[in-house]
Amino acid sequence: MAKKNTKNSTKLTQLLAPKHWPTWLFMGFAWLLSHLPFTAQKKLGSLLGSFLFIVAKRRRHICLTNLTICYPDMTQEEKLALGKQHFKSMGFGFLETFSSWFHKTDELKVEAEFEGQDVLDAALAEGKGCVFISGHFSSLDLCGNLMSRYAVVHPIYKQQNNAVFNFIMERQRSRIFEKTIERSNMREVLRSLKANKIIWYAVDQDYGRKHSVFAPFFNRESATIAHIGRICSMTKAPVLLYDYGRTETGYKMKVTRVDALPTGDDVENARIMNQQMEAVIAPKKAQYYWTHRRFKTQVVEGDPSPY
Image (cartoon, rainbow, N blue to C red):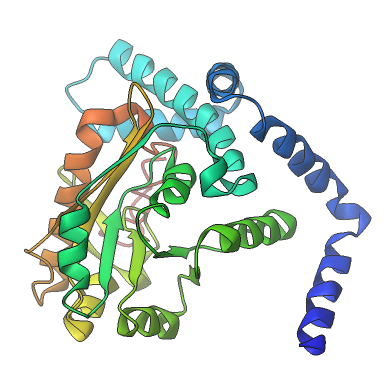
C-alpha cells in the first residue's frame, strides 16, 4: 500500500511543475463555476458557446462541414442556426462536465428520469453483463453521473493529451463509477462482463482505419469501430442502446435492447450501430458532438478529408 501511495504522490508532484500551473488555475476556476446554480450555468454556457462560435474557427468549420454532409437538404441559414445552437449546447456542456466531476451524484440538484429499468434488469439477469452503446452528446459526463443512480456502469474512456486534465478526469470519474476502463484495455472489458457488469461504449467516433470498418452514417461511408460486435459475440453479452440528453425540465436517460446485435459480420454490426446513432441524434440535433471529425478517415486511402 505504501508503495502505491508513493507512486501516486510522485505523479502528483510531477504535475505540480510550473508548466502545469495554467491548467491547475483553469481547473480551480472550473471548480468555482461548478458550484453555480444550474440556471446560471445554462445562461453562462450559452454565452460561452456564442463566443466560441465566433472565435473557434476550426471547430466551427468542422461543425458546419458535418452538418453539410449529414443534412444536404438544409439551407445555409438553417445550418448556421443549428451550428449556433450546437455551440450554445456545448458551452453549457462544459459546465455540466465540471459539475459532474466536482459533485457526487446525490449533490446534483437536477431533475433526472430513467426509462428502461426493466429492460436493463432483464439483460443483467442473463448473467453475461451487458454493453451500452451510445453517441457523444454535450451532457455525456453529467448524464453518466446521473445514470449511476440507477445502475453500476463501467465507462470506456480515451486518455487526454493534457496530463493535469487527464489526472483530474480520471480521479473525479473514479469517485462516481465503480471502475473506468481505458479503451485499449480489452482484458478489463472482458473482466467486467464476466462479473456481470455494464460497460459503456460511445461508438460514434472515427478511430482510424486500423480499428474500424466502413459503414453508412447519414448516407456517407464512415469509419466505425469494429470490436463491439466481436466482444458481444465472444461473451454473449446483450447490447443496449443508451440514449441520454437534456429535456425541458432536466435530463432523461433511456435504454432499449438492440436484439439485432451482434450479427457475426463487422460491417453489418457497424451499419446497425450507426443506424441507432442516427435515430437518437434526430430529436436533439443541437446536443450532438458535431465538432468531432467524424468523417476524417476516407474509404480510399489518400483521398482528401472533407475538413
